[in-house]
Image (cartoon, rainbow, N blue to C red; front, side, top):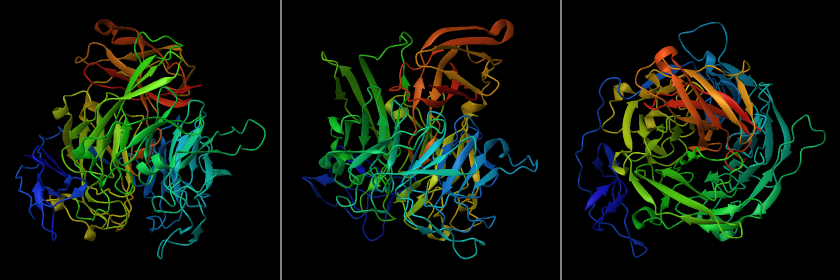
Length: 631
């Protein structure tokens, strides 16, 4: 039989960890669960040991971790502010701050983050009027680039003894809608209340720019079947230039039996399909529903393979498996008004754990990759067909981590843990310090690479974002008491640096992938204000210089929605590969190139708003990003 992580393939036997004993698999503690006839059985007390050595890397081959200037909050939320190089950070405010203040949110300026530069300017701009518990909210960006935070947490003490003056209670945030104006980055506006209180909701942007807020519970950590919101609400932000009051959200129900199949609806994976319908996936089931038709269910996902479907497998909070939509490629011959009659999208959920896991339980070490084909029938209705699942072997167990899509199609995994579940210190342990690379285009057994390790533990409430520079920004984690954390056998404890503040982690980092160091194209024709404004189905030119020798042409031009991350989810996550209409260069004479691309044809492919545009060469070198606003 083949044994890895939490699954047994081939001959269905199994072993179950008893009495705190453990076997190891490449340095990981392994717990085996097997389902047979809907009942769990246990095999030998101890699983056969696998002595596979931990992966090693040649110097410099695994990318570079860099310490940045300290953030003055330990953020559970990181949202890239559209049109800027700044990130909105929002924390769970229960720990003393390094600067003895009690703000819960701030703007972190990446242009001032380099620790080697001291120009007297602060990398942190506090937002002092966040009076409520805005953490545990969902969030999205409006077409104008403002950030909306929906739902959150009940009242909570903003700080503890020793954090300085001004400590008080944060107001109830469960039902609030708050708007952060990107042009006035020192305050938020409280504009409306949700139809339902929502703790841990997921939010996506609909084709007209409205916010769809789904799931979450009416109370923190509510009971499945009782406190879960088996509904969603749609709210469209009214820009300040439009007179009148903000409209009320419209509430729609999801069939309760389908809602319960996702077991919890705490930060579930939700994404907009090019048809305009939405896909949701929870622990091991998913469905497609129509946001404009009272939540009518259009299709259900194919059953997972048995070894990935056992009853306790969980991929939503508190066993979060990051779910991401793979890039949507628009064909080069697409017309400006096309709505493709047939289209296929793919999505992946990485890791997770088992329901009722203890801190000693190994996380899932597999990813599930699904696909759905959309096709219009003779009456113009969309018909959905789910393909067979691929179950991929990851380098090891991992959950509650962040996954970031690079412009050249590779994905970077950072942060998270190998065992346990999300929550207070001691609930997750064995931190995963290594970055992983995931290449979705490689053969199934060659998709992962283990890259360089950070020295900083980031488990619960960690965040990571793709930045305009093309590197990955990394912040947060606030439940990391080193005395309550075990390190895996393959981690040298002298290489791990405990937080100077105890549990909370205020240090910021970046991770730079090796491909970033390749000679890169430099976009040279962008407007002086940094943003190009385009309509749907519009042709536009991207002019660039390239002085390298490894590439011969542009491979792709991509649009990336700005990150909107918390608890492993990325609510704005969307990448589109644009149609290339013309692609010429004169590298041999003046190092110049020009590529003509077409913007997406409608809001079903790309809801209105801001996107980062990157150019990638055929050697995987990629440019820094520039901003595009699609209206």
